[in-house]
Image (cartoon, rainbow over all chains, first blue to last red; front, side, top):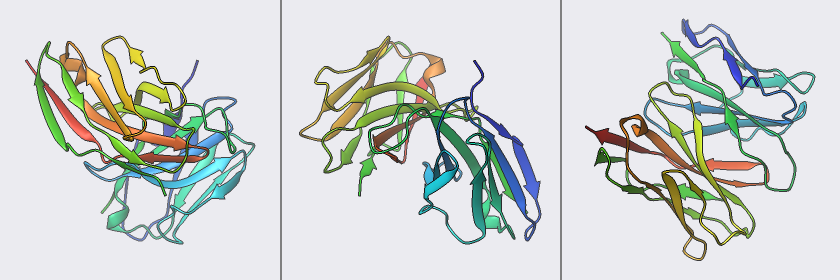
Length: 117
Length: 112
């Protein structure tokens, strides 16, 4: 079946512009995560969705970052007034189970490489 | 808060040899999951192997196996008969509930 997809795969933008990154999780996966990966670094947690709600927004680095998820499926991560330090790969992952119990394996999308000039 | 440490930023191994990547973590939880993910230059994160903390038996997947030491909070990955396609970043990850924490990664190079 289809895996997690993300679009665009690459995005170049000018400092100060807004960008939207899209994630299509695996059908039926209730949990969705966004991560940021700077060049050569590990994964930095940004936000977690359980269905359409985001119980954990603690990783969003500033109020320029926001995310939404509609219909329990597609999610968009929006970065307003982009800065050069926002340049990174943004990864999305989804999994089957959400809640207090340990979750199933996360399945990752290919990521969006964002470059802010 | 949970933390994951990978003390080897870079490693190399000759093709067909065996290599072990280290991972330690810190948690007060008793029932959790541990994962090793591989990220090749294509940047697609791929699950290599996972371990449930309540299982004492070490997980194995073909050439990949783990040495899970729960008391020591250690979760190392052994790659046997290394292949050129194993060249990648390897991330150790911890999961409890909705919390996923990743280590900083180990860059593995398999040399011909």
